[in-house]
Image 1 (cartoon, rainbow, N blue to C red):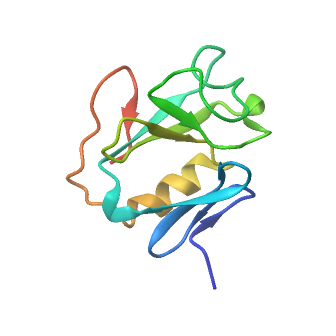
Image 2 (tube, rainbow, N blue to C red; image 1 turned 180 degrees about the vertical axis):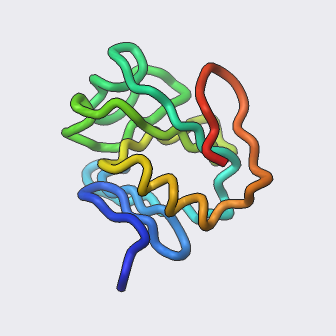
Length: 119
């Protein structure tokens, strides 16, 4: 099966985003494109998730497992309608964004903060 985007932890299939290492101990989260209300591209910094290997220090955000996150500068907050937004950090943010854009409704709007929306 060909994937539209894939790295060690994140895969974009024709139906969903798969985030490996999201659940303890190594469970995969499947996020159907239709369940995404908004996606926000975020700049990672010391206080905005860059040092977070896995889990949360903020009750509204859950960082998927990514041992390489400390070297990354960009992540994505996904709003799925629940109280917690997954934070994912693809190895190639631009390729990930392109793959997701092909599947999400262009009318989806991101809200809040100084973050930029990709949809």
